[in-house]
Image (cartoon, rainbow, N blue to C red; front, side, top):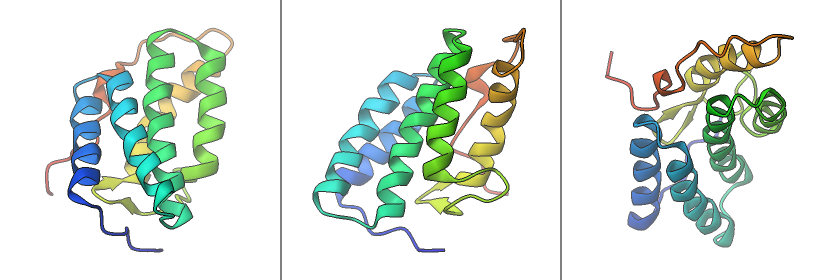
Length: 137
């Protein structure tokens, strides 16, 4: 799998700001920070897997927003879109997107999607339990 391209200082700030916002449960704000990064990567024609990867992160934040809104259709539809970009938990497109472990993120989101896809979702899962920053193990 391709190694993540170098980010400019400003792009690194957007990436890490988005991660911090995501990890604090501020999914809309994370989406906004990553959108600046996505636009920057597109403008400089970075390799497509990484441009799509950031788009996928934006959609991950949107999935959790839809969970908070209890919008089953939104969760399921966004999952389909983001797996087109990031892959599935079993077959991620990238192992890591800079400091984000894509496989773990997808695995962490899957229970939310599975719940939303049921006829009668419980909405019992805590969206803020999904974190991108992980302690070194």
